[in-house]
Length: 115
Image (tube, rainbow, N blue to C red; front, side, top):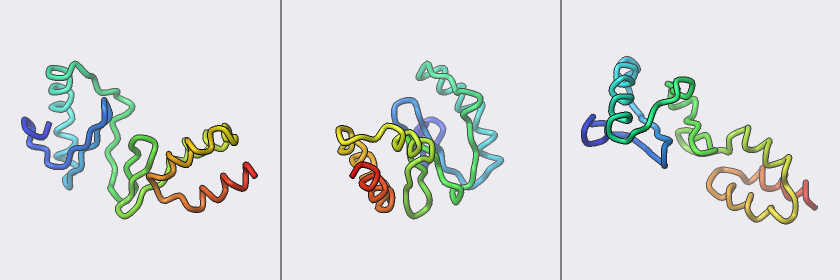
């Protein structure tokens, strides 16, 4: 995408990707080109319900986190699931997950839930 479609701000992890652009009209105009490129070059298809165009200040929901302009937080759905499954055996795993976002308060809540 970066080379063929000349997209400067493009993030990808496996089959998830994010494109950052200032112009909303241009982004929407690119969607058919993205679909064609992904289908022909990578044999992937865009899920019609998962194409989301939003402003950066609203946050980018990507890989379980919501990235905002100056920090990252855990996605609400992920947080709820985590509190439903937490126990002393999987606590280190969840702390590893929380290491990648602004989560001091959340870690304190988890510790109080367990102990």
